[in-house]
Length: 157
Image (cartoon, rainbow, N blue to C red; front, side, top):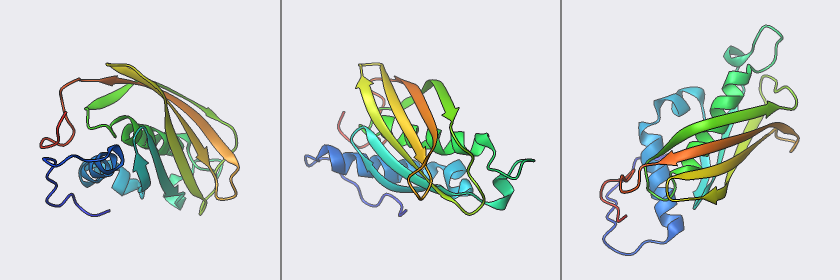
């Protein structure tokens, strides 16, 4: 994903354009996501779609994807969705249910959506699916925001 280039937010932006700009800024600083091969496919207001291909190095002793990698993909999608409004937001609590294993070579897609948002907290659901659409895991995250603290410094509040 390209670096954030000459973003000036002095002109009114749509929520979709703001979410895309925030995702570019986050991704430019997100060494963990890039290291895991996570790719942002889409980021909109309160939502994000990210993908990751399961590598051999992600397999556990049972020959399936270690749950920590699946959690990392879901948590990253959660982060992009809950920061999409340009307000610094972090995870307060997360849980995940693993429904079936993921195998080497499978491309996983994490789709995050905002369930509810309050001034300082929000709830987000993330579904992680295999290429065939079969659900791998269900994740729920509770976020905590710092009102007035932007992700992109030059964007309006």
